[in-house]
Amino acid sequence: MKKHLFQLTLAAILLTAASACKDVLVEQPKALTVEGFYNTPTEVEAGLAAIYEPIRGQMSGWWIGILESHTEWGAGLSGAANFDSFKSMQGVSSVGANNLIPRWNAFYQSIRNANLVIKYTPDSKILTPEQVKMYVGEAKFLRAFCYFQLVRGWGGVPLHTEENLSESNAIPKAGKEKIYELITADLQDAETNLPDKAPLVGKPSKWTAKSVLADVFLYRNMNKEAAEKANEVIQSGKYSLEKVKVADDFNKVFGMGANSAEEIFYLKYNVNSPSQLVLFTMQISTPWFGANGFGVINWHDQATFYKNWNDDDLRKSFNWYLDKSRSNPFLSGQTAFPNKGVTILSPKKYNNPSATIATFSLPAYRYADVLLIHAEASTTAAGPTEAGLRSLNMVRRRAYGFDPAAPSPVDFVAADYNAKTFVDLVVKERGYEFQLEGKRWFDLVRSGRIKEVMKASIDRDVADKHLLWPIPDIEFDLNKGLDRAKDQNPGY
Image (cartoon, rainbow, N blue to C red; front, side, top):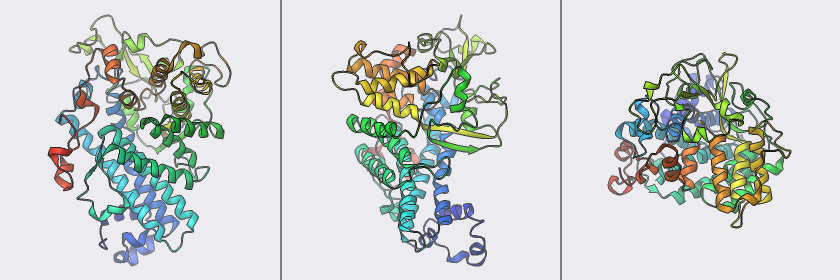
């Protein structure tokens, strides 16, 4: 590798570590190279921070906005033109594709920065072998996390690793299975080498890696492995569902300063202005945060999914409010929705009751994820297992204000379901639980329910090509390892 390759990346990393490296920066700036940088704990931590930054910047706003625009509660009522092509369900337009480019770039920026840590940290003369394993494990976890977003959105993508850093402008497209193999291997390394307890809030532990690995196995249709890995997390006793008595109790899980026993992997933010996620989910004016949102997501009280949602489910009133300040003409032109006799629904999941802006937590994985992965993956051909039913009922009990660990009047009963109807039930419950968290679209696609659900819920036909997004044109321009004619996703 040439001595000064990736100087821009190194410069960004050095800025992060400026206070620790002040003398070096002043006295010997020309002596700093990528190869010699990842030597001390301070330097490697700076390299790890450079992985988080692009993820944090994109996951908190546009990424969630794009994904929620693919749902039955976000696919029709917004006046935000930037999201229209996502809502059409017929494939991403040129405008929509342009909106995806920064997200694609950010994930690959994080992947590139992870590859630097993975490649050069083992050469340190100062770090102990245990430190090297831990730091590399964290970088591999984050690399896997990024590729997991990419493979679900775009399918096969260019596979950049520490092995081909010097060939970054000529990387061919790898198939989905190849991407998943790397994701799985990285997470297995992370679960082995990350600490039992995360050293800082917002960093992963071995249990974080196990949780994400369970999710990856679910997406790979490796249900036995997914159930086993999820059960490891459950049996560890490291996490528990927050108890909820009234809807606002969910602020312990989703509030600005959320820090609960349910957190497995949250992206943490110190903010001096409204979080991007709040802006993308809130209205232009809202009584729940006191800031101007973008108005991307709107719903109405006659929508099928909402009407069929039990009013006693506390998630319903926590996630949405009847917004009588929005007039019905706002719905004009949306043929899938009525124009009269409805009340607009606006999101409030990430509300801030104290009307202050201090910290923000973006839930990437929480204990409810693990329980619902376990419930779905443990279902056998004969029907739901006792353990899987218990996991599902824990989430449902909490949603209705009951103790998650004790039997309740709202419990599902195994005898009422077979294998298929039980999985239908879990996917439906995931829709209630993870609203406005960017998971519904991927859930419906991977489970093969996307066309059926969208047609039944909002009378919208989903085109085959919409199941994947177009690889950005600029990637074909800059990456000579790609062939536009054969490597672009079908229909684009």
